[in-house]
Image 1 (cartoon, rainbow, N blue to C red):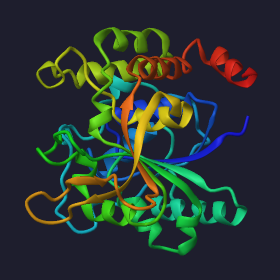
Image 2: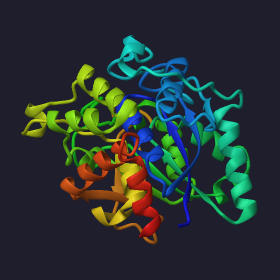
Image 3: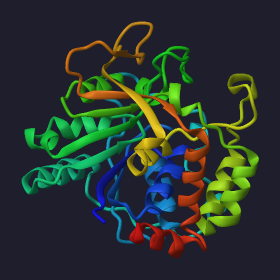
Length: 323
């Protein structure tokens, strides 16, 4: 089995925690590093959270590092639970890995340039503000050539935003960085709120994380219980979305999703700064907007890969090796 080389750029975040745990429970992926950026919380807290999340999996070999402390140009904004800072230790438990001293932007640039030289471009799963990636792309032309694609959770195309009526948080937090990434020429697969809100996780799913996922699953269940995501008024039924793991799920099983080729852009100034748009009639677009998901299959996949951190780890690995 040829594994997909991946860097996860993140601002943990409950959704980010689920995506990281899902990726590290998926033997199809070769996670090269976890790079953190200020977003949901400040940089020191995103780094601390990432180190604690990775520590739950026992991956002491995996580099976790800090990148940009704030957006390129706009005033800094944080997520809904920013006042809490780092996740409270009792919710996660377990030891944290020691962060790398290398800067995240330099790591992305160095690793991408090496991938370009080797002819084996990597994938970036971007599940936070795009500041680190924008800065890395500006460091050397080989950075873009070393990235096969950027799989990005962000934006709101035809649906309402969740930070403002017009904007999703990751893009709103640094629209200038998004503009650089969207215009870089690197193929982009975008998961906007239009699709991520189509799949909801209920209390029963949270209980399954706790029962099957070992220490990692218990920690994720604790986070989902503490920071309730259910919004029946918005979603029309019980449960709440886990946005960021869709980027990981698409890498594992793209057949679960539908999408359309498009040129993707972002508004960087004015009253609607952070608003994303998609031109589905643009000639020869290099990007795609994901528009639909098989909810039941997606939820089952997330549950399965979180369970890989518990008693199901060996069985999940053996299944992949024999397929």
